[in-house]
Image (cartoon, rainbow, N blue to C red; front, side, top):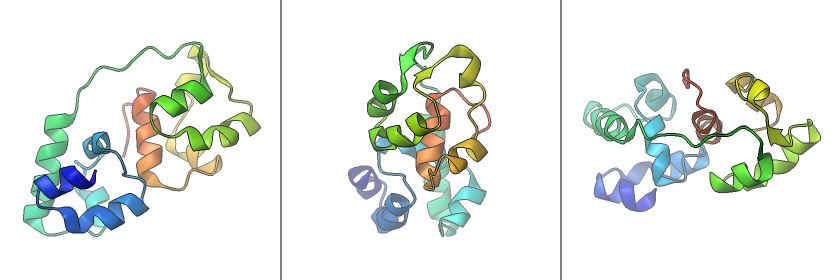
Length: 132
């Protein structure tokens, strides 16, 4: 993320983005919502537009099928393997078709995932249509 922000001349936002779980360059797709950007302290109109434009240009990549995938493998593949214990303790050990649609922001918060960027990455990887 640091290199991308440097290219966009937005490197000063790297600490707040990292603190909130936006640590991978692919997380830029979640930064297209002006309310979320404001919540993160990104309010200068030019910077907001730069984030939104870059995020919109990065969105729309196809998702891999998830049915039957082990949660530990899936979490590692999206850079969030350290959350596996939280899922395992609540009985989520594979991504069954009937459970994938039940994941939402509220559930992820209850599981103990406090960083909004990480919750968005999880929801996006699950194919959620309402991210923020």
